[in-house]
Image (spheres, rainbow, N blue to C red):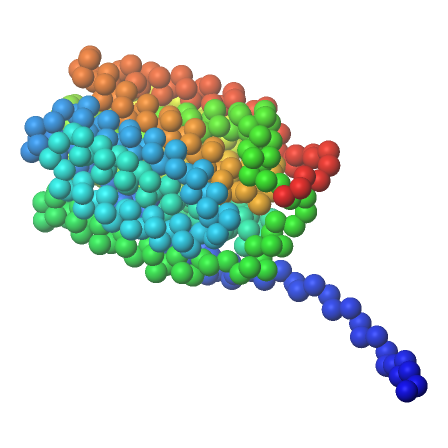
Length: 421
């Protein structure tokens, strides 16, 4: 049998690899905004529960403050782990589990009758929920799905949404407490937290986009962690974020009680917290937008320094409702405005392959500061009967953070050779 004649048909041209598939930026930002509005808005009003819960349960302020401190520490401890899972398997699963923990933690907070139960529900359970429903997870999706030239702006938009949630949810939570009582208000918020799960469905990332986002030299998780922690700029970012956590959580948790001690009505504290959330919308958006044009380390240094100036002037000025409102508005502009430039620098230095995990590690430092801000506020108040020492610490730490961010290098890290996955 004669051999078959060779085919003379032309070889088909090579098919180019598919273009990266990304989620719609509008879809990403809308869903991220909704999730952060709920997750950040609910937690921002926890200070409103300090007095009614401690008075009815017979607890000290330190008991409540310790539970909030544990919450912030648990949030920070579990943020890198939640980030690792989100980087590997997608943010959707992490967000759903986080929503379930959030709802369960709020219900159990309302049922707590001892300090240990409060620490387990308000502290550990809600802290774990926040690790899976807030910035580290959402920003990982934004970093992978939004083009680098618009990344800082997009992070500013998402942070502004979380800030709007603070403005929106504080009066809502205060109204729930006034209308239904503090316990029933927590049950209602638990049901509301479940809405995070369906919103997470729209943040499922296309596999092609995930693979293209991680193109280039691949690292293992251990290599990425060693690289980041051995890099001086990453260490300075963590130091600054520690101060951020100390300042905002101390003020957010203890400002209502501080104003009550000074004879202010509860409405002043509620308005102040709402103003923090409202002006935070503008501050975080401005920080994200400016991050496209200015050096982010200079933005961060200015934010921390201005916080110290604002606190100093607040303590020196005569205390009136209007001085409180001015202070809350200024602090609102500076409240979470550190988030877009800090996370944008992390992505800029290390890339987006392990963005959620590395942001989680930086955020862990933030939450160690948050733990100390919440706990020391209650502890030192119990020892001295006032917050003077903690106010002084907040001022000094702000100056330190401003100096710590100046040496940060924003250029991509140079890797000597490709690292195997």
